[in-house]
Every structure is written in C-alpha cells, then in structure tokens.
Amino acid sequence: ELMKSNALLNCFPVHKTLPVITLSKSYELLKEGEEFEVTCIITDVDSSVQASWISHKSAIVTSKSRNLGDYGYERKLTLNIRSVGVNDSGEFTCQAENPFGKTNATVTLKALAKGFVHLFATMNTTIDINAGQNGNLTVEYEAYPKPKEEVWMYMNETLQNSSDHYVKFKTVGSNSYTSELHLTRLKGTEGGIYTFFVSNSDASSSVTFNVYVKTKPEILTLDILSNGILQCVAAGFPAPTIYWYFCPGTEQRCFDSPTISPMDVKISYTNSSVPSFERILVESTINASMFRSTGTVCCEASSNGDRSSAFFNFAIKEQIRTHTLFTPLLIAFGVAAGLMCIVVMILVYIYLQKPKYEVQWKVVEEINGNNYVYIDPTQLPYDHKWEFPRNRLSFGKTLGAGAFGKVVEATAYGLFKSDAAMTVAVKMLKTSAHLTEREALMSELKVLSYLGNHINIVNLLGACTIGGPTLVITEYCCYGDLLNFLRRKRDSFICSKHEEHAETAVYENLLHQAEPAADVANEYMDMKPGVSYAVPPKADKKRPVKSGSYTDQDVTLSMSEDDELALDVEDLLSFSYQVAKGMSFLASKN
Image 1: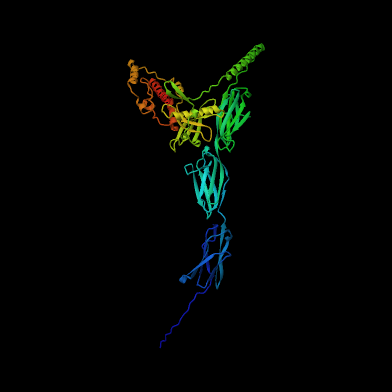
Image 2: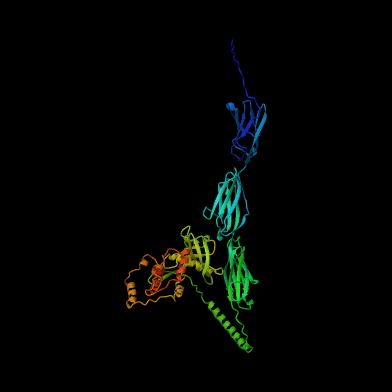
C-alpha cells in the first residue's frame, strides 16, 4: 500500500561575508552655507543587517530599505547638513554589521570660509623664441567655486582666437584646470608681455610671461661722417655685436682679416622704462684716419649665429708736403679767416635780435573779395578714425631722409581688408627732431586729413599718434616723384616726328575734346607709345589703377616696367593735365 505525507521545509539565508558598503562620494569641498549630502548603500543577504552613520557633527539621517529578492537586501542611509560651517569639516563614517562581522566606509568634508584660486605656471615665465617659430604658454590652476573668467592678454589687451594665436582650456579634475595659449609663427613685433587672468566669485589670480622674439641682425646704415668717422648702425634682437674688418684693395669681403676695435659703441632702446621687446639699435664707430692705404672696410653684425654685413670702399689721398715759405701766407690767411669769423658772428647776433618768423602750414579760407583768413593747422581737429595699429606695420627700406625726418617703405596688414597686405610709405621723425619738427609733422597730418582724397595727389591712408612717435601713412608711389622720374626717362624720351598735320591734330583733339574719358572715370590718362618708333604696344604699357596704394606684387611689376617704358609728347601732356587736376583740387580746398 502506498503512503503519502506532507512536510514543511523552512529555508533562510546564512551570513558568510561582511555587508557591502558603497558611498555616493568619498570627498566633498564646499563653502560655508552650502548643503552637504552623502548616501551610504548597504547590501546584505537579509534585513537583519545593522547600519548607521558615525559622526560628531549634527546631521539629519534618513533611511530607505528594499528587498532585492534572490539578490539579497539593500538599505540606503542618507546624511544631510543643510548649511555647512567651517566647524563641520571632518570625516563621516558609515558602519554596517551582521553576524559575520562589521565593516565601514568614510567620506571627508572640507568646508571653506570663502572660495580660492591657486594659479601657477608649468614653465619658465621668461621665454626666447626665434622669429617664425611657434610657441606655447601653459598654466595650471585650482579654483573653487568654478572660475567665471579665464582670459589671455597681450600688453593688457584681451586676445581673441585668430590665425596668429588660439587658446585651449581643459578640466583635469573636480577643481583642477589647465589653459594653453598657442602662438603661431611669431613675428618680430609680437614679443611682449602675455598675461593669464582667472577669477571666480571670491578670488582671482594672474601670471605673466615675458616673450622675447629673436630676430636676425640687419645692417641699417654704413656711412663715413664729415669728421672722418666711419659709422655702422645695426638692428636686431638680442642686441647684435658689430665687428670691423679692413683689407687692402677693393674686395667684397674681408672676414679673413683681423678685427678692428671700435672707437665707440652705443646701444639704444625704444623705451628704457620697461623691458624692450623690439629690435635693439647698435651704433659702432671707428676713425678712418687709422688706415694708411686704399682699401675696403667691412662692418659685420652678429647675433645668435646669424650674420649680416656691409662694406665700404675708400681711397687715401697722398699727403702734400708744404714748403716752409708757405707758412707766413698760411698765417695771414688764418688771421683773415679769424677776422671774418668775428664779423660773421656779429652779423648773426644782429640778425638774431630781429623778430623771428616761423614757416608753417597755412590753411587759406576766402571770406569776400581778396580778403583771406589764415587758419593755424595746429588748431585744426584730428579725427581718430585715421588711427592704425602700429603692430600691423612691417618696415622696410628707407626711401628718403632729411635732417630731422625720413620716409620708409612699409607693409600694412589689414588697412582696408583684414587679410590683405599693402605697401605704403610711412613718414616719421628721427630721434634728433625737436618740438618744432614734431608739431610740423602733426600739422601736415591734420592738413592732409582736412584736404581729403583725390587721385592726383598723394593721399593719406592712416596715422599712428598713440603709444609712440607720430607716423603718417600715405600711398606708396612705386615710380618715385615726377621730377626724378622724368630725369630718368630723359634718354628714352621719344620725340615723334609726325607729318605736318599730326602736331595740329594733337592740339585740335585737346581743344575739341570736352573731358578725357580717363578723367570721367577719375583715373590716370594712358601713356601712349610714339607712332614711328618701335616701342611696346599700348596694351603692354597700361596697368589698371587701383584705389588706395600698391600691393607688393604691384611694386615688383611697376619697378620692372619702369625700365621698359618710353615717354613721348602725349605722356608729358598727360602728366601736365594730371598735375593741373591735382592743383585744381588743392585750390578748391581753399
């Protein structure tokens, strides 16, 4: 017989391991008044596990539990401090216990009275970079609360991302950051002070980098002065060292000869009150009387392994021996010259007692009839719309110089278009200029801005009057001035021998023609070749006229074309007409 029976089986979990504790965070940094909250999650096989927060601080603890089924049991204990204080800083421990044993986990709280910014450079703050190379400036900083302002500045002006430089920011931790300024193909004019500034609601900090851009040395001038002194002026950064060499005869180089000690060396800086980041001028002189024979003097500038040189050929005249009988006559001439000097000094003194008259610019304004009012240009206003940034000018060779001023060829970047380079002429004063010359240059600038633009005058393009010496930027004339251009073309002038009626036809054309088509379009009249001579055709001689100044490509083409152009009578008539138009424009401004 088969028997059946029912049995009740009770199963319950057995503790074989410690409870598992998981914290929502292990470290917290807060300011006074902020809320602190951390959750402790305890996992065990059943609900018999005991859990609690151990802390000497007053905090609110809330508990939540849930059964995970076959996966065990979970309990969450949340500790909360609504408004932390500095005294609440410390450790908070979550502890759990079951029959197998105890386990715990700790979280650290750091409460600050106020936030902070800790900034430090990861590299040397004084940096030397060769011109044309790239450079990186890197800083690391810690801040709490999170930074609100992070900027890079150059000479106290905020930098924006561009093709020349860009900034990268990176977060490396909860309160740690890095920033990097990348400088692309540094120019000689981009050396200076770079500053990184960071701040939050409670603190700020900054770090400064001095960036020096090394440039190759360049010989600016090599001249013999009136007192028999040879002068060599070089520029570069750092300051170049000038070496002198001499060799007999006419040579192109004398570097194999021994060096000559200079008589005097002068170093000049743009601004002695702050570190100089621009090219440094070095002037070295020697006395030419030390050379006893005709030869070649070479001046070499050296810096950072780069060299630049220039040479000067001169002849020593044979000394003439004077006869002893010539001495009385020489004394007589000396006495006469002394008396003449005294007379001249007296005349100069009398002249200086007369009222002084100053030559200056005059702006003529007609009132009525033949009455005019002369306006002092120094009283004219200067419109700052003509201002152009100095750091966008790259200077080239000197086009002309006087006693106190000079005109230098330069390249202006972004004069009319942000990405365009334009060749211009820059008028400036030498360091020997006085207040009168500085006022005269400023008056010239005001008069040019007062006149306005016209195609038959050299127009004003801009100026630099702030942060340094006054610079007047005008159009660059690739052929130079008209007078010297005509002198250069004297030998290539074509005097056309037309038939008898040809000369009359030219003037009839001028008489019956109302206005040339070129004048209507406000452009230059064409330069036309002669009729009976083999010269380049008109299509080869004419170039389109552009508004503004010339680009570098235009200058190169113009100078090459200058050697090929030939002038005829029509060209001279065209030049005369354009001069008249320019003078008419100036007269209209009276």
